[in-house]
Length: 277
Image (tube, rainbow, N blue to C red):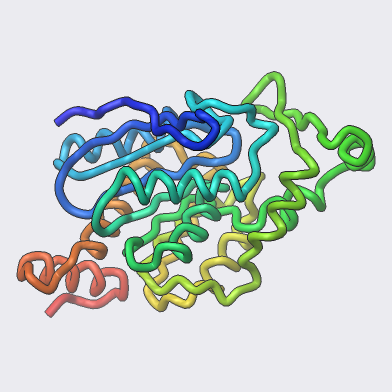
């Protein structure tokens, strides 16, 4: 098995960079965070997992991110949601497991709501639903608010990027259109949430609010007390790989596969703290 690198053509000749591994079982789709890209440690760990186990996997960069075309400052939640749905609709088949990190957790939820017949499980890492109006806007300084009102954007300093990145009026206004909290959030598939207790960007209480708002009864919220926002330490990656492996089992159609039925029962029993029959 190999990982294929290519571009998916979108409207106005915009290109989304993606990498795909064609394998067996439900396809795992990686949805990265705000101002991040598909080459990060967590996305790579899942690619390694797919190559080692023969699973299907797709990772991509949103418009204005990583290797994709477009300017980051021109991106919005609407645009990035559309990118995710385009990748799902045109580059994958069959059942899906969406893995969303930070903003990608929000987009994974929006995609699951839009494609309930395809999305069979979610793994969310420090999910940041509604972050534009619930986490970002309340923290803006008077100076930042004045710059956005005057210029339409403000350059936010970042420990991950020396040049910072633009927070635009369009991003904030558009983000409010896609708010899913306080819920209920109409997602009824199994969901696994990994959240750092020492996350300085997404408070664990925010991620827990999402977990509680999901309509699904099969939700497991794992708090890594000393974990930060990235959750990219070796032990964090082990938890992620295990959660995705479990989600793939839970997302596997079981009607015609007795082995898959047994594995699914065992996975559900483990999540419920019971011994499988």
